[in-house]
Image (cartoon, rainbow, N blue to C red):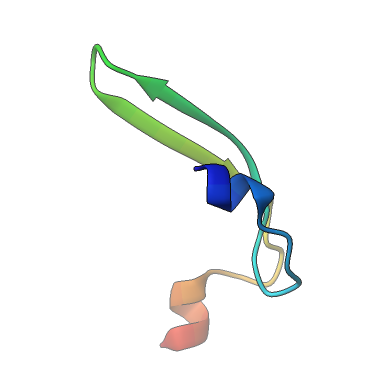
Length: 44
């Protein structure tokens, strides 16, 4: 998480925030909006 939050590169979307909760076990990462479609669409 620390590395992702410090990463700033034109080829990566920025990590805006995250949430870690133990009960129930939950991990959420929030990234900036990428307007050009999904990675899946670009790869297939």
